[in-house]
Structure formats: C-alpha cells, structure tokens
Length: 305
Image (cartoon, rainbow, N blue to C red; front, side):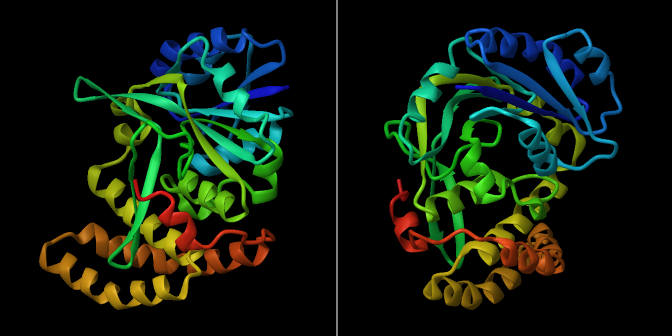
C-alpha cells in the first residue's frame, strides 16, 4: 500500500523544525511513503527550514490559498492509496501509521482519525472522536468519548483518508475558507454515501494546538466569525431533512435577535458572510454527483454520544 503524508504550512517554520523529524521517522517504517509539504505562500523561513529535509517533497502556492485548497493540491499531487493529513503543529508517534492502515482492509472505510493528545493551557486533553446533534436549528458538533471505533468526522489535522473515495467526494469544499468545518463536511458527505469513518486510539499524535498558525495569525473575533459562517454553510449545503430545514428557518430570527441583544456580533457577521457565499454553495452542489444512502437523521442519531 502506497502512503502519502501531507502537511499544509503557513509561516510555521519553528513548528516544522520541531515536528518534521518525527514525521520522517514514522514514514521510514513503510517503504512506499512520501512526505509532502504544501507551503501556502509563507513569508517566514519555512522554505529554508524545509530545504534541510531532503526527503520532503515541497509544493508551493504562489499566493495564499487557505487550508482546503492547499490540502486538495497535496492530494491531487499524491499517488498513494492512502493519504495522511497532519497539521504542522502535530507531532506523530513513530508507530502511528500501522494502526491506521489496518482499518482500510474494510472496503467501506473512507477515513480513520488518530487519537489527538492536544496540549491546551499546559494540560494534555485527549481528543480524536467527534459527535454531533441537531439543536435549535443548527448542527452542533462536540468531542465524543474515546471508547468507540467510529466517529462522525476525521480531523483534517491528524487522520488518514482513502484517496479513491476522497476523489469521488471531491475533496475539501473550498467555500469553507479560510479554515474550519472542511473535515466535518467531507466526513458527513462520506457517511451519506454509505462510507465509514473510524477512530483509532492506538494511532497517537501530539497536537500543540495553541502553537498553530490560525491562533497566531488571526484575532479571536475573526476566528469566531468564521466558525459561525461555516456553521451556516454546513447546514445550507448538506442538510436535506425537511424537518431540520424548517427548524433552522424558525430558529434563525431568534438567534439573530439574541446575538444582537448579547452583543455577539460575530454571529451576525458570520451570517452575513455566509449569505454572500450562497452562489458558491449552489455551484458546488450542482457539481456534486454522490448519491445519498443515509439520511441526515440517521447519521446524527448514530452520533449523539
């Protein structure tokens, strides 16, 4: 089985110095493994750092294209049967690949999520399995318990994907720019097609979440606005259950009024930004050719906890 490890990077020179050696050690455990870094027009010393690692194949964006486009570019370039996505702030354990690959013996498996040991406020929080629910007109996602073998989504920062299925789904949808929700959207569409997304607790990565480029490059208000925007886009592009759609429309005025009264202006700006992207959703959905095997309610009800 051929494997490609894809790392998106934007101004992450120090993270690359720290984490790429661990990635290369893990890659050497398998003969047919290539490490690809997609540099998103960094302005720091990332390219100089990467030049020290001769085993790394560097792809460069001429302009900043965002997370989804960078990942899609890396996958398009890859030749592997399985692509492993790792953020630049993620350091894998040396033996993390083998447990992931075992899942792909099942032909229905699209992706497998790693156990993510996230460093937050000096503490280690174990994550990696996602759940979700429908509440007050929105799809709401959360971290789930780690004692189950399936997950609602596989993180774009530490998971493996079957490339043939990735291509059939069209990869990450780029209207979630510049970041967040791409991986939830892709996994949700995979479940709808009847594919499976697994969680593997033996595949361990260390995630220095607070060192990542998003928190360093953008303000908390901007990040919150984008998160709200993409929550709207997820509902508008994926939800087909008539009851959920009606529920969303009924609750929307309440959420808008409440956000204004509580000065949560990020929600309002997120909504306005999302409405401007409706043409992108229509165009993207018009090009989708996947058939829905599972319903929204069936998927969500399977991942309430």
